[in-house]
Amino acid sequence: MTEPSFTIGIEEEYLLVDRKTCDLVNDTPEEVMAECERRLEGRVMPEFLRSQIEIGTSKCANVKEAAAEIRHLRKTVAEVAAEHGLAPIAASTHPFAAWDAQKHTDKERYNVLARDMQAVARRLLICGMHVHVGLDDDELRIDLMGQIAYFLPHLLALTTSSPFWRGESTGLKSYRLAVFDELPRTGLPETFESWGEYKRHLDIMIGAGLVEDASKLWWDVRPSARFPTLEMRIADVCTRAEDGFAIAAVYVCLLRMLYRLKRSNQRWRKYTNMLVQENRWRAQRYGFDEGLVDFGLGKIVPYNDLLEEIIELVRVDALALDCLDELKHAREIVQRGTSAHRQVEVFEEALEEGADKQEALKAVVDFLIEETLVGVE
Image (tube, rainbow, N blue to C red; front, top):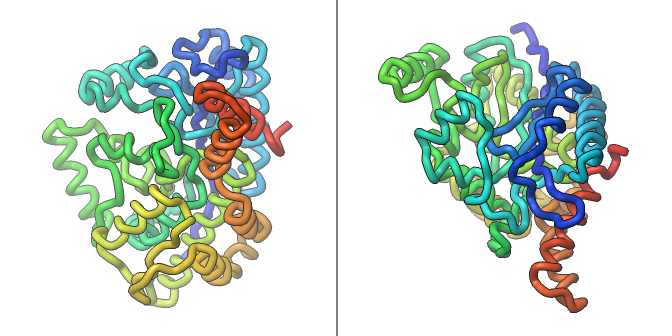
């Protein structure tokens, strides 16, 4: 077998807020997007809502190269936004914004989405992070999609950044998934025996007029419709850029580990979606606080133990892909807490110091503005 390229591409979505009021900007000035597009040359684009902006790296040889691009992209978006009194926040929900006050971007794709999905689409005031890994062989992409699904909850637990919704603390670390799962064709991916089987199913949906193309399959991981990559989509966007680099490292190393198993005529044991879904919910609800189920052992295991197992399992892959430091940074996320943990802490500390609820929520936004540029400026 010819080893895949394991190239990396990272996409991140940000929310734009008013620096003074901390409110979400529901109608971003056109000059912001125009200037970003001029300075970033095709690596920035509008998202479904006008309060959002999406950036994407070029095809990068490794995680370090992608990390350098993300730093540049975040910094540039922040500089352009600041010229208009705005700031980007890398968080999967805004602490107190109302989805029904938002406007969607006037593009054909988004107009169709708004028309077809109605209130479900209008509620999509959420942002995510997608990681593409280059796997040039179609059959390999489908095979590894079925195996990597086991690890998706582990990745989600490290990224959570959406504990608030419409001014309320939801009790979930990733409320984003609760919103996104209202759409059809979301959640854990289907399992296919071959690329041909996948294509037959997709062609039926296209032929029946259900979807235009594979980009309307919004699974937690999917074969990209645009690139020869396997695209991981379950993650919340990480507020700290360096946390996102760790997620990219864990994901690409896991894929290389699964490829090594395949090359040796082995594979990761496939568990049903019924079981993996339980870990997905635990990661959505608790992050890594309450552990995940090790289905081989048949019991809940502390997340830190599972992370150490993963790091040892893919250490050789991290060395081969030159991302061992980024991989090990996952330990710091667990020690420090994800953005969701820290947002809740900032909110509760503000209340304890005498702030009212709205003031405490604005303190969270101020925190997010600052954290989004940690390690970038």
